[in-house]
Image (tube, rainbow, N blue to C red; front, side, top):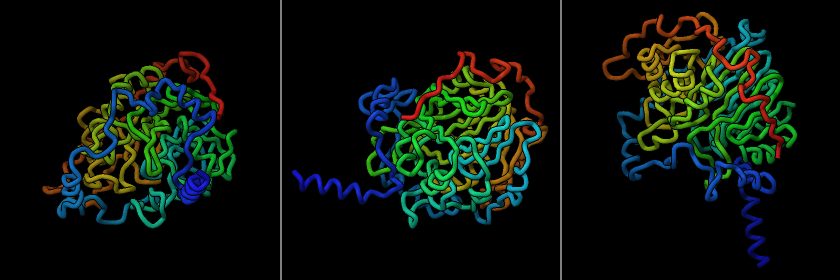
Length: 413
């Protein structure tokens, strides 16, 4: 038997550091007590979600290697990263709320005097290895060290394009706090983040950090970093509410009816950051199309156009078979169809969602392979650049607190 133990220990020693760590001890016990954990796995809202490509491998390969469509999955020219990000975020936002999209799902949100960094990925590849895996299509707008102090880093789930080892190890040397879904703290502790800096939440749990209320809200997705997907770490979307402003970050998710409930409890939001890229008919349950993303945005806002929707989870990595520019184009079309206000900044371009104007130029057209028949006519500016709905008084509580009372602070495991 000792030989078997030695072999097991040897295999664990060969496990790449980027795989992270499996939950154990009290953290695992807490996972098993979660009302969302059943039959050994976390359960998705809306029933079982397909987490692997449906159909045959041959069908998927035909689409993936199609010689006519494959060139459209990457930009034809250099992606225009905003050149003055550092100078633009040096001072506080005039309105109290500013978003800076760093690419993919990484967003710096400056909200009511606090700085929140969502899903920071500064690595070159979203992969456990430095030599293989999807490589970024544009540089990060500014070095992580130049970003300045961050009050809290929010992680939506543990996939490589959202939880990046080199980025977390760099942030581990700061004094920032981390808000993460249940179980994800095991990875961060292995990478040097102390347990007292973790706020590890189940769905519908909240914590207060510097005047902000951060709530882990449901999402329809899955987890996993190693060779086995054990579903032992949770995935989440996030609501962040300050005294004056509220924002929502979807993480990765398929569309589900729960957005209405999230909006009713935590909205309406001044801005939503919604995943609209890496969708496919092969995995329709776990990522949203631009049309579904806009539907989610409207659900979160109580069914009426309110606030600004910013598309995320696109342009930075090639993770699906759709054309590289398709998520941007689809978002513009969905906004036009619903009369919603959107912001489509270049990577690194800060904007203030409650200001009179936000970035709406379809910048990707200058560097993408044009579709057959050319680009559609640009949408009417009035549909997407009018000032935000000023109806902030519709929110529950003038101080930004939830209507259900003081949020619970969940101690780190």
